[in-house]
Image 1 (cartoon, rainbow, N blue to C red):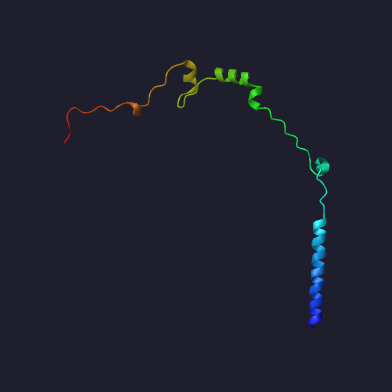
Image 2 (cartoon, rainbow, N blue to C red; image 1 turned 60 degrees about the horizontal axis):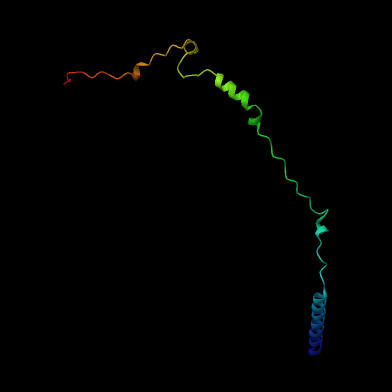
Length: 102
């Protein structure tokens, strides 16, 4: 039985030595620049999009300058006539009484 164990150890060492010898003898093929051709797509930078504001900037500015100023709380008729709107009562300061109340 000891002979079988010795034979198995010898065979295991032989296989290991053969494997290590083949690993040491292996030469990697040189890497070439053209190896990636066909495997990887070439990079193409996308075109920069055109800004939509640049296309009609002059006419938009002209339209903005010709717009009527809208003030909240005023009628369109008052705005067109140029009459200033009456101030609401809550904006007026209250008058203080001269004599204090008891």
